[in-house]
Structures are given as C-alpha cells and as structure tokens.
Image (cartoon, rainbow, N blue to C red):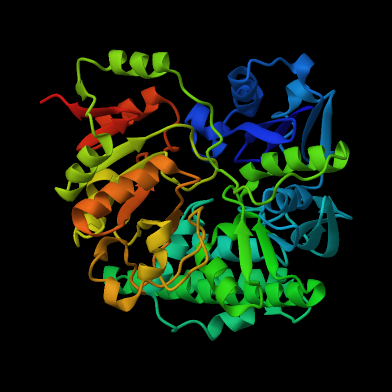
Length: 538
C-alpha cells in the first residue's frame, strides 16, 4: 500500500511518502523552494514540489498511490492538484499520530500544543490530550479558543502557543522564530515573573485560559516595558527579562498539562507534538518534573510533521494495518538519497572555485581539522526532517574553544550574539557530561551540563549552564558517531558544536549543489561532501 501525505497549514508545507507501512521519503517544501517556512511562497503558482520530490525519488506516479491524505487546515491551494482524492483529517490528530506511531512505546499519553488547529464549532483547537494504545488514539480533552483571522498574528484565545507568539513578537522577533525567545531567556531575571501571572490562568484539569483581554493586557505591558527604555544594554536586559518570564510560565503551564495527562492515563510514557513541543527547554523540565519516565518528541513537531502523522494515521487507521516493531528507533533522515552523478555534477559546476580531495581516513582528517579550530560544513546521506540539523546537514566546530560561539554567530551565521549552539555527544559518553541519562536523539531536550565539564566545552554551554544536546547513536547516525569517535581519540572530548548548514534566514541546504553554493557564500573553512574534503581556491 502506497500513501502520499501532505503537511503544513498556511506555512511549513511538506510531503511524505509511505510504502507498505514504512516512510520512504519526507521533505519540507522550503528545502526545495529555498523559501523559509514557505511564508512568502506563492502556493497557487508554485504547485506542490515536495510531493513531486517524494514521488520522483521512488519512481512512482499518482496512479500507483492508494491514498492521499493530509490535515484539514492545509492551504487548499497546496493540495489543489490532488483535491479530488484528498482525504482530510483533524490537525491535532495528525500531530498526535506523528508523535505516537513512530514512538518506541506500545502505549503512551499524547499531548499536542500549538498556536491553533482545526475549527470546531466556530472555535479553534489549541491543546489536545490523547491516549494511544496499539493502533488506537483516544481523545481525552480538547481546549479551544476564538481565533480572529483579520488581525496581525491572528489572535487566539486559550492558546499556549499564541501566548509565546505574542511574547516573541513583542520583544522584536518575527513569526516562527520563537526559538530566539527560548535562547534569550537564560540571560533574563525573575523581574517580571510575578507580573505575568495576571495574563493567563492554568487549572489542574488541563485548561489553559487566556482571554482576549488577557492578550491585550500582555501586549500592552510588553510594549510599555520595552518602549520606554532607550539605553541599548538596558533594553536588551528588559527583553531578556520578558523572555525569561514567558519561558517560565510556558514551562509551568506545560508541566501542569502533563501532570493532568498522567493522572488521566497512568502511563509512564509521553509523546509530544505541535509547535510548542519544539521548546526543548520545556520538554526537559517536563521529563524532570512530572511522573513520566520516558518521552518521545517528534523531531518535526511543527506543522510540517503533520505529513508524517497523516501517513501513519492513513496506514494504521484508514487501512487498518498493525504497528510494526516499536524497538526500531525513528530515523529523521528521510530526504532522498543523492547519486554519485549528483555529487559529481555539483563539484563540476563549481570547479573553478574549489579544490577537492578524498582522504584515505576521512574521519581522522576531519577530526584533525576541527582540532585546529577550523569550521566545516558537513553534508552526508539523506537530509533530516524538522528544523534541527541532526548531523547530515550541519556546520560543525570544536566546542572546547571559548570564542567559537561568538565567532560562528558573527562570521558564519550573521545573527544575534546571544544565540546559543547545540552540543552533539556520543551516546556512550552523554552521562559523563550531562545531567541526563535519557537519550535526546533529535535535539529536543536541554539538560544541564555537569558543572565540572562546563569549562571543557564553553562554546556550547549556555548562560544558565545548559545545552540543547543531541545524543549521537551508532545505530541512527553511524557516520556522525564515527566522526565524534575520531575526535574523542584525538582530543579526549566526545563533543562537537553543531548548527544548521545554512546562512541566517535561509532554509537548511538540501542538495549537494546547495551545499557547495552555501559553502562558497559563507565563511566556512572547509566542506565535507560525502567522501570529499573541499576547500576554496585562494
């Protein structure tokens, strides 16, 4: 059985192709069009390139697809070519399916939290509680709120996601850049924590309440607090204090929601999806401060991930197929495989600007380059789904160098100086450096770095002593594991700094040609493209 699933809403469009119950390929539209989050994409004229990418990668035509499915808030123009066959499902159920079905759990509590989802009785869903067992997902409670489409940011009542959107927008960050707020929060203080208590309520029965009046009061407070300050340093601190307060209250609300969900289900396992599940700081607090023992967060937790959820739902529910072996870890590396011809074409296209070699010991050579302080692009295999670079489309550097964070922010990424970078660590060594034994394969948990280790890896140690860690598994990503092992043998440190392979404001690179082009446009020292080590001609 072949299933083509589409994802997204008014942004973050995507497609997924499932063959006989296994995801063969999945891709976000932005990786192909090179338009971040598809926010300025002319959907009417661009068509659906992600779906074509998926079909062409497997040599299939639409006549060979048994089911086309997606969630019910996707822009209709995005699925226009398939509208006669399109099956639509609830948005939050697509999120829930994306988290539960690929999880390592036979049964689990499921929490979906985002800005707004499907319309139900004139209101929009904002938070939904589920319980999954076998192939069944049972809805336990749904929180809804009124959404006003005619206003900037489309205000939504009773929405934890919108609460954080207002906060981010108020301190100067654009739509879908809430990760900046999470990164700024550790620089803040408790100055406004008490003040934010009056902008919402959260009861012990899972209900987050934020009225239109609450929203207006919060906007007014943020605008006044930031607007009256002219000194640049004081203004930065005020924004950081607001970010801290918002992050604190989001965490408290999410923890309350999860405690309620545990009380309802009694499960030891938790699955998370929806845009708020990308808040990796809150995810770690949930793991630490609720009775749940194990947690799975869909790496494409935002709207792009609903393509994956829709495909799983189509397979297990619409086609009544059983789940497979849940012990097999979910791989996020779902892009298409590129051929030797694709690599050779990219190298030939830019041959006047690059030198190319193929070292006998690639991993040892790259480890040595990193040890010397060079910053490299790392392009291997199939691209990862979701907004985090998980080691196949990454920029890598030595985490031991104190100046590396500032260097990459200014020289490579051209972004705000406070923005942190993530550590990648060998799975076997994680407990030696981090206050967490639970794996974080998708960079969606932020534990504390052990105090005695922080001076060893300063460039990935955040202001509050934490790090958004990716656990590197020999099973899930053997090449990245091998590189880290080589670096450890050379230096004694099993950690590298990892960030996405792109310039600020553009999507992560997808093709070999994208990688070489980006390498030439930004100030990287070297590029590892599959087996080749590439440098710029002087």
